[in-house]
Length: 86
Picture 1 (spheres, rainbow, N blue to C red):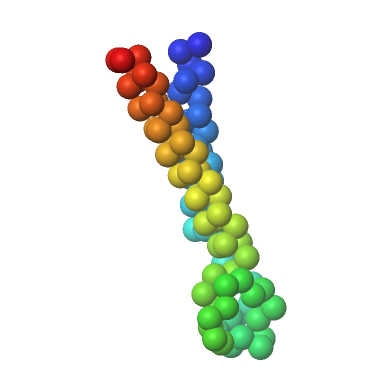
Picture 2: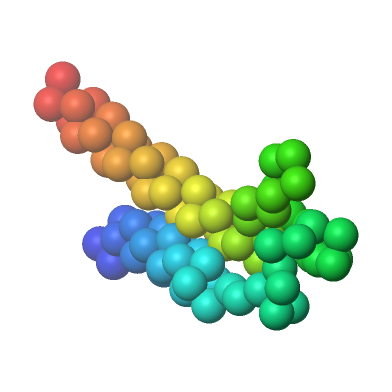
């Protein structure tokens, strides 16, 4: 049972690292990606500038999920520790 309580943070860190790998390996699909009408891979668009493509958006979502899981685990650990004290 001891290994099970450390499974969630290990998985959360793995999910966050996977998201970072997706972000770092994303590349524009076209040579001239700054000109919006030539780019078909719109992600987050601010005016005429494409800030993030879809792969980067997915990577950031996965990183956020990993961090949320890690924060959930930390809150659970603190809560159970405080419950044992009282």
